[in-house]
Each structure stands twice: as C-alpha cells, then as structure tokens.
Amino acid sequence: MTTITLQVSDNLAQRLAERDDLPQILEWALDAWRAPRLSAPSPFAEMVEFLATHPTAPQILAFKISPASQARLALLLDKNREEGLSNAEHAELDWYEYVHEIMTRLKAHARPPAVS
Image 1 (cartoon, one colour):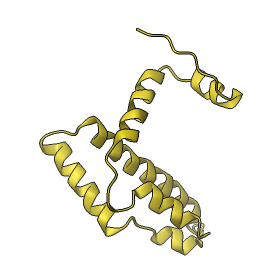
Image 2 (image 1 turned 180 degrees about the vertical axis):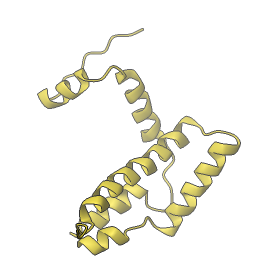
Image 3 (image 1 turned 60 degrees about the vertical axis):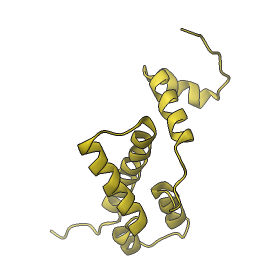
Image 4 (image 1 turned 90 degrees about the horizontal axis):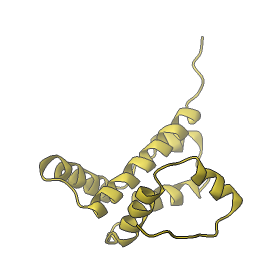
C-alpha cells in the first residue's frame, strides 16, 4: 500500500479525522469524476440551479428533478435490481440519493407548521 501526503485546510483535516473510510471516499470520488457526462443536466446541477433562484417555500415543496433525470434514475434503479451497476453508475446513483436527502430536509423546513 502506498502512503500519500496531502495539504488540506484545517477544517477539512478535522472532518477527515472523524472518518475511517478515506480510501473508499477517494475511490468513489475518482469513479464519480470519471463517470460519463450525461446529455441531460445532473440532478445535483438541477438542484443548485433551482436553489440559486432563491425559491419560495411553496416552490421548494413543489421541486422535482427533470423528466430526463427521473428517467435516468429509473434506468439506474432497474439496472441495479437486475444486473448490478458499475462503479461509475453507483457513484451517479449516489448523487441522486444526495440530492434527495438535501431536498427532503429543505422541504421539511419549508412546510408550514402544523396547527394545534
């Protein structure tokens, strides 16, 4: 096994010290970086572009990824069930999950408080 020395910010060093899976994270990141670029925008880019518009709470609650991204997600999920995914496809699916997690949290905060 090879040892690599990196210079990182103090904040990043602290975050990395809290983890024990840095080799797996780096492998995932490299696979994601090499993933083929889709003709449709990625779900992450769609989310960032949407959030950059400073959406209202109702707009956040109504947010959905594009039909093209929804179709790609369905394809990845089907392939995962049937034959399995490549590392790059796993990385791509991870982005969908990441976007879903972020938007779920934002939508929870955007919901009006329950009336008692």
